[in-house]
Amino acid sequence: MKLDDIRLSFSALKAFGKSPAHFVYYKKRKFKQSAPMRRGWLAHLLTLEPEKQLEILVIDVQTRTNKQFKEAVAEHGEQSVFTRKEYNEALNLAEAVMAHPLANKLITDATAVEKHIEFSLDGVKFHGYADVIGKDYIADLKITDNEPRKIQRWVLDNLYNMQLALYAHSEFNSEAHIKHYLITCDPNPPYGVIVYEMSAEMALDGFNRARVEVGLFKDWYRSWDGETMPKSYDFLEPLDTPMLLELPNWYK
Image 1 (cartoon, helix red, strand yellow):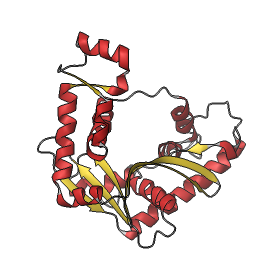
Image 2 (cartoon, one colour):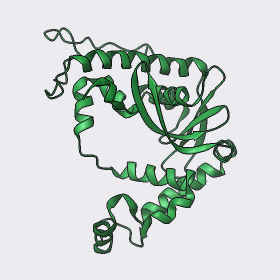
Image 3 (spheres, one colour):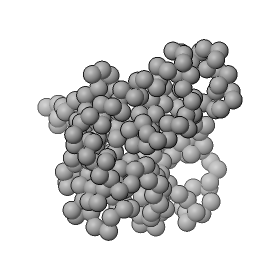
Image 4 (tube, helix red, strand yellow):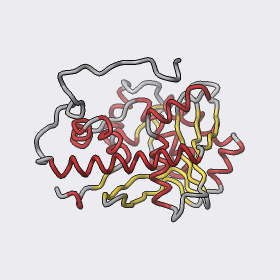
């Protein structure tokens, strides 16, 4: 496949950031939702698109090993079938988010939710789904441990500043006055909700990181034969020398 025909997602670019092998594995893998992913997907639906809950099937059982649940999955597919316990947990998350004044305002004032977006960055096509788009802001809903002392590192480790910056690039002509929000909800009771606003510096860092990764991806993809599985350590040079593990500045 030619580079012009490739469409990347944020997740694919994130995988490439680990190594070309991670990217190839990500593209070829058989996708299967984990329990936290299912809960997050359902919480997103109940929070952002509650009218679509008519499209899911809730089986009044507590476990997925129940015979009635398995029969429903066989008939309707795993994506749309949930246990009563899964539904109630996701509903608790959704209600907690919508009870938060600022989170509620960002969602109810949005011009679009769960919007499919397509755009190009430095000659590479992208697509994805933006959770919340407002007149002058973009927001993403994350179900995660959201303690303030942990969240900064979590955002940078997972490149979520890059994700928001990419989506803002798609939706707005200029990002200079666009606000980038993370609506976070702890997955465990009492489902604490915190809304974070990214600084302009953090958002710009995310966008610049995306451009660097796109440049590296283009160089690698042009040299790849399209079939050979890269070694997961191809990006480490030199291979005969160990990487030095040092104390990070934040620890010092």
